[in-house]
Amino acid sequence: MKSGYFRTSEAEDVIGSLRHLKRCLDEAKHDPQAWKWVILSLFSAVQGSMVCHAAGSAQIECLKDDCATKMLAWLESHDGPKPEEELAGPDALFKRMNGTFGKLPPAGGVVSTSPATEEAFKRLKLLRDHLSHFSPKGWSIEKAFIEDAIPPLLSLIKEIELRGWAFRHLDPKGIVGRTIDDIQRAT
Image (cartoon, rainbow, N blue to C red; front, side, top):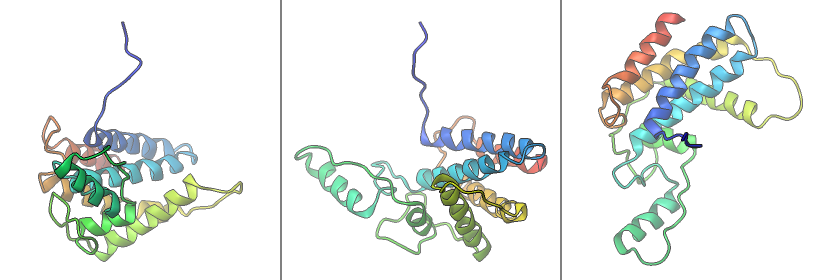
């Protein structure tokens, strides 16, 4: 009997987002509506990579500061109900990853980011926010605005993979980088 569920993980979701990004980039050559999904799948891959990179064995380093504090206290005492887990926002995850914010360093270590990568991330997040929370109106987005953000953000994901922490449970090893290489060859 087939199950009504599928199982995935944060790391597998990054791979799925990257594969979807490749399909959307191919589709965008013929269908301008695919650019929305280029943005959303790239954002999903970047955010998922940051979560995987930040999350330690207790998986609290990717939570909002107050949630992480409560979870750590609960893990030490197991007193009362388990606290709710709320993921830190994308800006907080980015700043934790590059070591410019927070008391919770990423489990995978600090990843240096260039001004170009920081700008690309801000641009991508802005576009994602507009597309996810839009009001009923049309919009125009210069394709170069998106296309210029893709290479530094894919490089960031590759750097996260090279650190060896975020995707350590994926099999085969190096699948994130190979998937990114496929995207880069196709574009």
